Length: 73
Image (tube, rainbow, N blue to C red; front, side, top):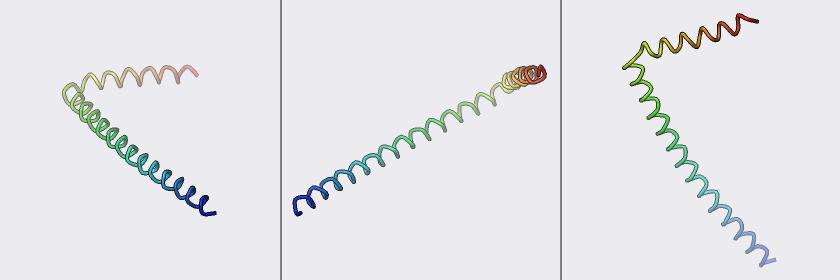
């Protein structure tokens, strides 16, 4: 019984260490994704402010294409 208890404690400790490692890795990945999203959003904002008519034209083309496809039904 004592040997089994020690073995279970070892498994529990190993599992706890693994979960703590996964938690740290998840946090690092989430932070990295947040930083990339923030950088991408800033770049998109800068692009739109620098050339708004390009975006307006692209949106008009997409809207016309969607209208054409939906109008054919």
